[in-house]
Length: 366
Image (cartoon, rainbow, N blue to C red; front, side, top):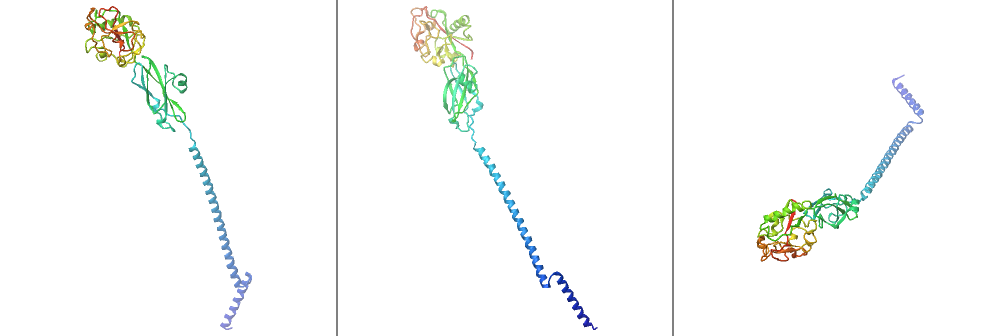
């Protein structure tokens, strides 16, 4: 056969082979292409749907977790706010740890000092204070104070101290402060004690005529010292003794503190501690708290040589500066029955009087 005929036969055989292949695949070549495209699109759609579902689940899980966490945080905040709103009232806190101190202590008075307290609801200046006293160390707690304390100052606010008077000389006293806030809650400070100063005692000499043995401060003081040592040593301090008498200026009764160290901040009492004056200035103001007779210093009808005015200055009559015992000379005397100026200047009898005495002072060394 010729070359062209062979080529034609080969082409026919190739075509038949292709038809067989398409038949086995289920259709002609055109249909097969269409199905392949469809399958491809279906696979793609399925993959897309699967991805979409996956995304949806992820979003749902994420949102659910987030909401749950948010709810938990909300509960936590609510608990925190509840704790913050709980209001617990606490009692006041005493200042300086509740320390109480004292100043200006005399034989009959003392200034009690404390530091103002603080409180979580009541302003410092609105806190109120009470002051209590006791003769023993038994007012440490609120219960102790209620049972054993003596009220000396009722509720007062904005206060850091109070002066307590009417005390006895040479005595121990305990004090405590109670602070109260606007809610009525109270706290006690720390109790503290103070000892009042001992007094200056006044006692009489034996009866003597004016000027018999005196004539000078030295002689008068010596006579009082001897009497204290022999007659009053078990009852009175005889460390310091002076005669209560005005000589020539400036050696007068009013200047005894300046000249001889007589304390000015102590009460003046009789031998049994009955107070006639709260301190030296009170003694020199022209009056007494009680009479010399009531204090047990003189007999009710007794008189004493003073040679002084009501203020303790030198009087006009002093038995010639306490050297004369003549009936022609006179000396100023005080009375046992007067609480006014008559206690120191009441009369001016003759210097030969046999019933007039001198008075002496005795006190402990400061």
